[in-house]
Image 1 (tube, rainbow, N blue to C red):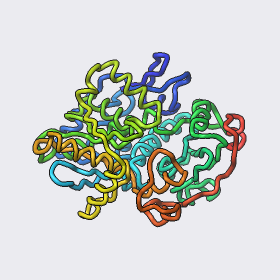
Image 2 (image 1 turned 30 degrees about the horizontal axis):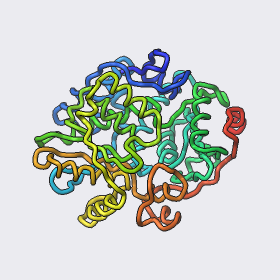
Image 3 (image 1 turned 135 degrees about the vertical axis):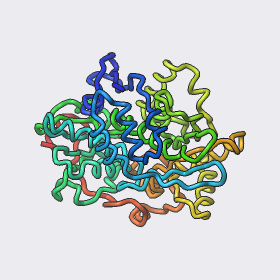
Length: 413
């Protein structure tokens, strides 16, 4: 698999990941017809082994099997614990890594790729919006990779939460924190402008969720999950997509195109819609629909879900001894239950991804990130410190800037 930019140029995984955004407008999109079925049907393979096989199948021109194994060991060593919810639903926990979120795997995969790039071409500066779990996941991913530095940008009224003190540059780590006088769109424009430039003698990589290596990691995780869940079971397998996770839907669609034998995708629809705010997922999904017209309609099962029902279902699962769900995962759980009631029960299983600790809902509710809603149990921001988010509740930033590249260069240099 390679990646195509908005002008029709193509890059391999390492070159595309090293930039994060194309030189012009638009985003990188996958290109090619790799086949991951050998990974999902490998006999007696572990989660990490299946991830390694999927990486090797996706990028045979970019790396040898030994590097694929090293990357899989770095990013996919944490096997998602699975628990049953009644008949037909499996809740898969992707939120048990160091940041308590699913971002750990794709951030770890990106960091492994960029460490290899840095060994060949010199140190790199990773740049990302640190809001929510992103900052925590990226800060853990680069830890110990001395050729990688990380600068996290925070829009106005967003706090640096979940970062361990020893990861910060002022404490001898690799992470700098910068507050930007602007909203998330202003931060995103600044990151795009900086991608591919040099700051403080380092090439800059846009390291957010739109980086193609992080999108590839989502496909790898789906393949590895299917590989461990298919064993000893029969019937159709459906993948759930967390509410508002447009990139999750795009990853499912592209994984299906590359050979993942899922029967369908269960999607919760709320008053906030289906895809969430990011434009990259919309671009990917549109391109998929243009190339495979009608497929999305045949794969996607849309179920309307409201917040109150999701909270009730989440509480019921916890009362049965199940895992604590964040709000987006709880909405997917309700969507899965309704899909079973609509005709799938008895001959299908639906995987509901648990994507983050519910403590991140508390963070979201009190101004760190505006992507989700508050947990019913969060009455004030101090509740975050009592929950399963590692690190500092509100780390002090190193500098505050206007959203301009020259100011960013000045504070980093």
